[in-house]
Length: 255
Image (cartoon, rainbow, N blue to C red):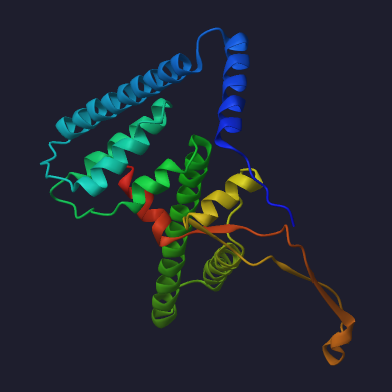
């Protein structure tokens, strides 16, 4: 097999040709363009960092937060990643996160939160907030269910309810239990495109629930013949639940 050899002079001539041709296309030299671009990026990032720090100070002052020093291994990546963000709403999140991390009353010394925020779009964050609201409503209704059960137990012991009222309470409890059990098993729908949902999944903020199983067929005698039933599931028919990391991340982004 013959050797494949390129002389350094050949490479240098090729670079000269490419450079000369590029200069004809863009006018200024390649070096000038590179420096100009770098200067603009540095100014852009510095401006965003300053805005985040000023927003953080406003949150600290408004909440009377007693600040503490933050390790450079956390502060530097936070400001570095935040410097690329030009969306005002996301800049607010960076500022709130920084304010929480320097709060002496909180024990937040984890650099995973800046990493996560740097990977999210505002649409993904809003969808995550909406999922949190659904989870909190689910928890509220679950507490309501437990209260109904306690009341029914007390009423049963005292036997001081009319049969119709007791039956209404039992029906309300059953309906609530059925709805909550369905949500607990199937999760909630997220209004995002698949790639955005996958991004939140890979960050560990949400978890995908198994697809629903649909049972069809059967009749009054089918209990003796299981073949009368057919079970199927749709891989697209699934929901999501928030993870513990998802809840803690949203807490870090709140004041």
